Structures are given as structure tokens and as C-alpha cells.
Image (tube, rainbow, N blue to C red; front, side, top):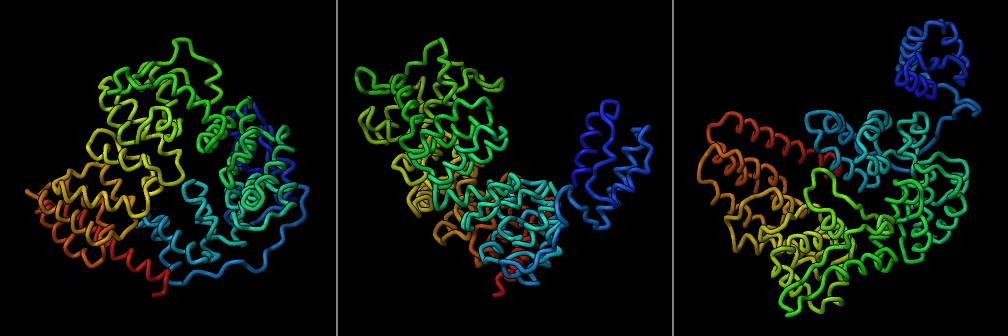
Length: 509
């Protein structure tokens, strides 16, 4: 409802600066209601209009859109309904006691190609409006009816983007809302990347910065070197939000001009020492090269980062340089180059931490991942922020963790190690689960251990179901007679029981 949006803007600007919008609502019934208000008393009119529209919305009245034909109801849908038992669980995971299970519930329903029941659509669409991390999976479960409903509320338009595998509709590109046009372009990128690029190039100058950035993000579908010239040209866009999207795409595009430029800069700063026994580092020139900013290199670190300016610039270059460049530039395997970096105590942290960050550029397994992971497991670098399953061969992460617990069964359950364990989809294999549980058993030397309780709780969902009695028994031993920790354990057991039923309600098995 545009009138509500305009009233909100007036409230933010202040009635002394803007008259409350009481005319041109686009709906005769609402117009008659608002024109009865005293527009001279702006504050009172604003409050009265807001109250009136709130009542209208709660009553379910749908206003006509100015200049548009009456809204026609939708008939039929493209997806079957999920099971009745599953939809009964939705309020509990949406805003209730087990809200942390909402993403799993949505993903399970989406995986079965089903949609939610009609009466649940408003609450679910509102959840997505408030929490962006749910939007993609919500789009997958609302169906045609949900997309129709999303057109009636500006806050819900995020749900209008069609699935990637939907057939592109040219009318949407010409007349649709922003989210619909983004969905159209993404769908077209999936089948005709060059055609999608040509369409965007044709309208690029006339689009707003926000729309340019949103449309450019669709290039992550079907991204190839054919896109490099156009993406590189957008690095000259006046708006930072557009440049940031282009920079991120080009960092992840093998062979892009940006990646080549980063590699040239990195090669000028890192080389083998004269004796070949370590890596030597030369900081960038003192005078910042302004052309570097075009590729996304910031000249100065943020206030919280105490590193020097030139070291900060080099860190950004290293994190954006393809890892395979180093093998050719320095002549050696990843294992050898990591050892040479470690031999330089002044710069090894900067080199290794940013080589690790560069893993985020990789879209497939790389020979750099395992040696960098093993280095991180030695406690020298953080392990979070990297999708290790993407950059390691299938099953390799689990094998490395099994080995870790076999060698060091008393390993501390630091947050970074727990995050690695949670990257493995549950339930874990029996061998790894046994190793982890053995580690907890040997670490449980005293009751009332808050740290160990928290560590066990964070991974309890990943044990095979038949091991849960052992897990809960050990948990009770760690808790001892601490009432707070006992209640924490009881809540988790109840959540596990609910989760088991939730999954059965969705699958019907």
C-alpha cells in the first residue's frame, strides 16, 4: 500500500517539512475516508490516517492500485501442498519455542518440491521481509499463490523472483518490478548468458544504481570469461555498490583481467629469498596507486585493524590472487611454499592467513586446501569463514578430522574446530562420531563444566540417532547437579525429540 509508505516517509521527515499524503491514494473507498481528516492539523492527521489504514489492513481490505486494473485472484498453483502434519509444526519453528529449526523445515519442504498452505503465507512472507537469510528458500515454498500475494505488499516483493529453472518471460523484463526483473535475468543467465548480458547492457545507463547492482548480481549464474569485458567496464561505475558487485564477481572468475592484475601486484611483493630457504616480502610503494582502488583495494585499514597501511594493501592483494599463481611464480608445491612462508617469522602470518582467505575464490577442490587446513588445525590460523567442503575433494574433510581425533583425542573443542565439525552434514559417520565422543569422555574430568557443556551441545545434533543415549548420558555426567545446566540439557533433549517428529511429519515416513 503506497499510501502507508508515504505516511511513513512523512513521519520520518517530520510534519513540519511535509504534508501528510491524504489524497491520490488510488482507491475511492480509502480516499473518501482520508479526505474527512483535518489536513491543517498535520500531526493529528498523520496519526489518524495511520490508524485508519492500520484498521483497513487488519480487516483484509485490498486497495486498488492507482492506474492499474483491479487485482484478479489467482487460480491454481504450480506445487503440491506439504503434509497437514508438517504445516502444524510451522508456527513452532517460525516464531515459537524451536525457531532455530525454521531453516531446516523450509529446506526439507523445498527438497520435496512442495509449498506451504495458504493460511501460512502471510506469516512466512513477513518472516522473510524481516530476515533476509530465509528469502531464497521461502521463494521455493510459496508457489504461484505466494508470489501473487507478494505483489499486494511492497515488503514482500522479494518473493517475486522466479526460480532459476523457470522459463524467462520477456514481459517481466519490460514491465515487472525490480525483484521480478532480477529473477527473469537470473533465469535467462541459466540458459543464455550472452543474451542476458546483452539485455542488461542495453538498459544499463537508464537504471538506478540500486537496480544496476541487483541485476549485476545475477551474473554469478553462468559466469564466464565472456562476461569479463562488460564486468570490467562496470568497475568505473560512479556508485560503490555497483563496483563492489563487479569486483566480487571478477575475483571469482578464473582468468579475469582483475585476477591477472592482482597476480602482477602480488608477484612484485613476494619472491624467494636469495638463498631460496624462505619467502621474502616487499611492501607496496608508499604512494598509493589510485588505479588499485578500481579493483577494490582500500588504501587504509578500518580503525579497529591496527595493521599498517601498506601491509593492509598487500593483505587485500594476496587474498584476491589466484592460488595457482604462486606455484608458477615461486616454483614449488603448496606444501613447499607453506613451509617457505613459515620460515619467515616476520611475514608468515600475513602470507598464510591471506592464502587461506584466497580459498574463498575457488569454486572446486584445490591442492592448496588440505595443507592450509592442516596448518590451521595446528592452531596457527583461524579455520572459520571458508567452505572447506567446496575446496576439498569429497569425503576428505571428514577423513582429516577423523585423523585429527585419532592423533589428538584430547583436542580442545575450540569454536573454530566445532565450526569444522558442523560443516559435515549430519549425521556423522560412525567412525568420526566415536572419535569425537571419546574426546568428550576423556575431557569430562569434572562435573559442572560450562565450557565442555557448551561444546557438546553445539555438536550434539550431528551424532547418529542411535548414539544419542550415550551422548545424553555423558552430558548428564558433565552437568552434574548444576540446575541451570540440567535445564539446558533437558531443553536440548526436548528439541531433539521435536526435530525427529518434525522430519517425519514432512516426509510421511
